[in-house]
Length: 480
Image (cartoon, rainbow, N blue to C red):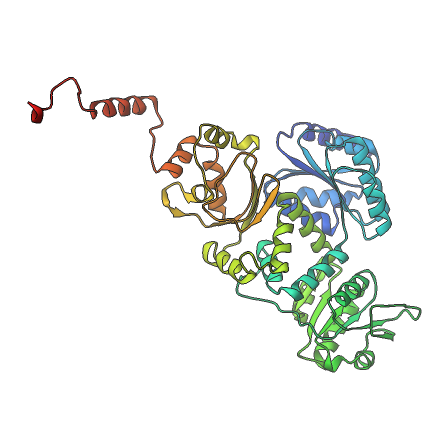
């Protein structure tokens, strides 16, 4: 076995050394790591995985991914293994620590930051102490707490119901459509299980002036944010004592999937109109939770994977959702944004990506701007086959000169250094990327002029253009 591990390690190291495109290192191939690997490869990103469990690496090898993926069976705490995974490579964009041990995640994050100051570091942790420690490291370090993330997400959804619908649609969730709005009510709620998720929900919902009743078996529980605390498991009797018959919603957040499913069934029987949110701990129980027909399912691993995926491939999405939830008066409303997305992109599974006009991939765009060509969002969003026809794509955010603008106007002029968050179908993404790297297409979309591409056709065009000029050497017959 040791000899085989040595061969595998050498093979992995050679594979990493041959990577010529941007890639990420994922440490820990559990539920969250597997979901994130799938999301990153679907977005075209190469992934290197480190996990000390051999069975996880074997599972990785038999899965079908759209982009290259390789795994190393090793302990990611050892700096040598991070280096073997390409930590110091200029193509390494991020190191993501997703093991089940939060102390291990902390050690990986610290090692990655010390060994490479330029790489982005993401670590999953529910400890506020870890957050304080990593904040002292400097650089780009991000802490993902799935329970805090979901609590904030739920509160934002209560304020603006459009957020959940748009988030599910952008994430490509099965059956997600822009005409299926979920509206969590704002009345009194019961929270079953005051662990990490319940604690965050109680604190943040209370800030939204939502009355909370809590049910938890911990007899010593002190909850300053709950109006009522019922000690014990969330049985039918305790649900009745907590006032299940008159509540607007129930959050089921224990660490046991069996208990959570039982509570959902009891709560639905006692109050069919209650809005029920349930925590799903294990991915393999998905069919059971879907059969229980809760209004929303919260899976910590999916919350973390989705948050990290959006952060890596479309960091400006956070600003977009903040705008969507804030309901700014000086811009389009959430309803107007959803209507625009529905009409322009439609019911297809959307692609979300960021265009950086200063990157090496858009040097043609930069050259066109330096020549004085005026290029607007409308030009870039036009179909190269017919510049009068728009692509199925909507710009969500544009960052220009350090300032972000939500839902920018199509007539806005683009400049070198602008970053644009796009949402559209596969064809629109492919054509826009091709347009920004083709001077002839850019010229056609900006001017409507279809310039010849070959030397012979350009020479012929010059001859024809010269022959169309009037000969000023001959007198005008009308003047004789």
